[in-house]
Length: 174
Ligand code: IMP
Ligand code: MG
Image (cartoon, rainbow, N blue to C red; front, side, top):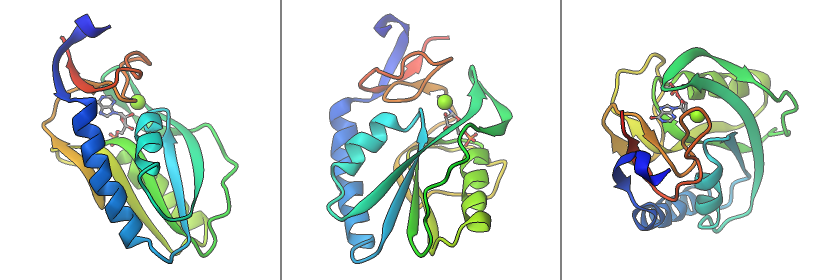
């Protein structure tokens, strides 16, 4: 598995140090508010676990199973594999995803929540944000790291379901 990695972009130590900062920021911003975190599976599994340990306010967690990517090119549509949404009425929603790329995933989910629930607000938090032209008009309020337009794996990110369990984010060899 490690032999397929061309270069490590963010080590586990670097990621966790950044999550200390974001966790602190989220704790501060949502202090005294009812917070519901919705994590997009499977990509945000590591991110969710490490980040939420660093958030020091009460919150609810929901995991949504969604798929949009096949191989290293987006399929352009979102499959909601789960339809049972935890009630977020009068709550502030924070979406967690591994990476913001075209924006299609977060845009679709954000609109679904805005249209179908009585959430008070919907914001997004991503580990990585690709510096590309978004297909949909959405940006994340909390970003771990900005990266160039390249395909990365590890720390939850996959290539055809492989490499999610690497402890770091790296660039895959061609
Ligand atoms: P978007 O809908 O194009 O913003 O893409 C979001 C989803 O595509 C993410 O949740 C990832 O699962 C996947 N994705 C985008 N870029 C990468 C990448 O570089 N490596 C692995 N998965 C990616
Ligand atoms: Mg994926």
